[in-house]
Length: 249
Image 1 (cartoon, rainbow, N blue to C red):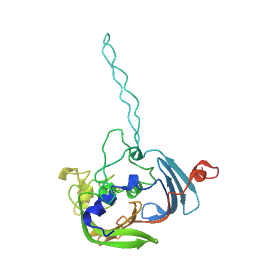
Image 2 (cartoon, helix red, strand yellow):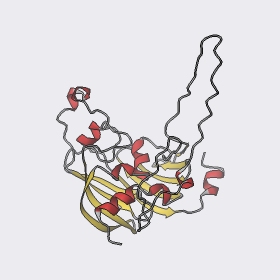
Image 3 (cartoon, rainbow, N blue to C red):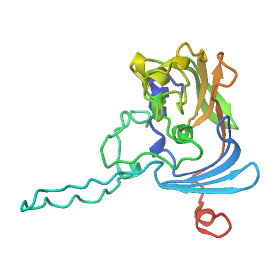
Image 4 (cartoon, rainbow, N blue to C red):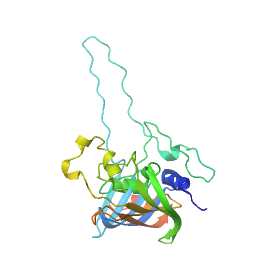
């Protein structure tokens, strides 16, 4: 299939429905070099460059509890039911003719995120929905990354870019638009941040089978701009023995 910009954006929003387990070799400025295994929903094992194992599970954030107090003599309200998560694979999204997701269901009880390692860029690379809108897609082409088909393009974040974690913290596309996603008023921007230098664009490759970001490399800009690379080694392999067996805790 020859991609066009719309299909690239659709692939970026499709990851939750395109794979269940993943084994990859990762390199980035934020996590260094490591090997990772992900089993959806909610299980992650990472072996870092020194051979240490890290196990993460669940969502990369917590939920608050609402407590209601009433005046004396007033009947208390019905108890608030505990939150019950709905996972993406339990919902069938509307699909395009090419099998990619047309739009993602949005519900308060629907939890998309995979477990986090180091920072939210990890979460975003596994489900790069932030690249599915408010980005300019240029020089789109097919490519091969780690012996796997990929769609590759030059991406620029546009006003309205909505990263998983913005404010120049963990967005995939380090940019003025990424900063403004969390700091939209001029007075909110620290003086030392004003006039920051950013990459001209990012060279981004998405793995066609999974929708995962396999290359996200800054072009131009500061030498310390965020970057990441993933080499996908296995998709949908049986990882139960690895996660449930001894020796990786």
